[in-house]
View 1: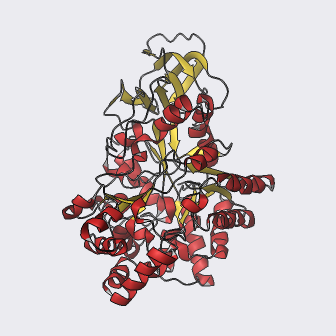
View 2 (view 1 turned 90 degrees about the vertical axis):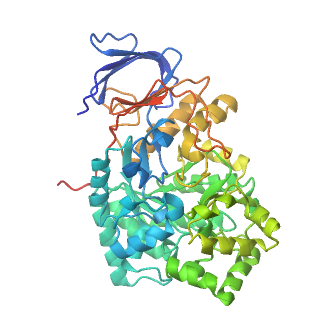
View 3 (view 1 turned 120 degrees about the horizontal axis):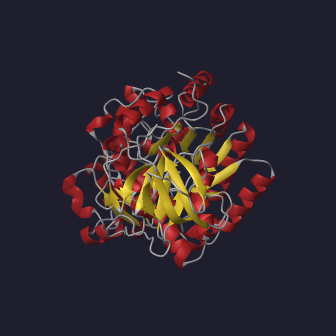
Length: 537
């Protein structure tokens, strides 16, 4: 139970997460729970928080976060709590540090440097999901954390980095690993099917693992095989996995990217609606921006990444392999770049591992190539070698019509996909949730305020099976956000990506204010959440 004093939130526009019109009223918080919701409430002795002119919403749930290490080391965690995020879902894209063998962590340390840096606190990673969740509890984060079992890491543990089919014995071992992760409290399983080694899994292998997740009532959260030339086929494969395994499906950063898919989100919606009509349990998340964000190494063809980072670097030093890689990047299109040739003027360097390369940050590969007189692919491959594959990028390949079409859907939720490291990371790490409320609700009218709040709170809570939060109702955990509808806005930009939101003066986690009067407090009331599948200790 939280030690927070009773708080009476007076005169807010209460948006309860249901999508129904908001109502002016009061909400009483006692300890870590919502006690009463109504019109004019009396609560002698309670601290009164004047919410005149403010809207009160359930805390926002970031359905796609890359804060796996940040929640352990960044006790302020302003990037997320300042935008009203009270829960983050980590273990995304099939790659994280639990459940991982020491050998797997040695690979992941290098492979994920562009996502998470390489902090000393990583150590040898965590052998089980339970170990990771215990580490989160010890760290006392600012917000809550829910974890997924990363399928790529599981394959790395059992099969390694080879591009081959898993044997029946290896599939059985992976199923046991996923089963243990679910019993440890994971909410589901993620995949990163454009990343090594998760991308080497067949549809049948994914179905076999999905069956285990389904048996525990969890959700499958895939980053599919293509968001480009093969996007619709890739989405269809994920629906097939869900249909055959019986697992609930939640599609990561679901959209249609690159020139080949401009204006085609309607085709994706038709595919998803047909699956829903056929009984597939399905949802998805998006971020409200056009550019994507990943690592420069992710663009490489899978054969070049097979064997892990050391093998990749060896190929980049080999003239024959390097020439083949460049040809595929420039002409053929790689599976790492979603089946389309790389347009180097869309690839902007967002961060580097080696500080000596910092002058590349903020520039496109095309501009670096023009300045050097070298082919763009050669410049990119040289940078990968110099930076030991640790380079982060922005990919300017989105389409506004597609973004708007996806966010209107009834099964849509919000996710930042926020990378927190690098000199100029994607501003979505700091601005996703206020951008929904400000730009797309108030300024553009794409969603109503009530709809947006439901998309960012109650709906993701339902996807995860969180029955004690995500709405404003008596007895639920007091994860709450107070914001000003007239001024709420994302301030983070591509030039200045680490600016906190405007118009969000109060954020409560388990009844404790982590943002008060627009400033970060010292409170760290977050904890590791555990799914209903978690085995009793």
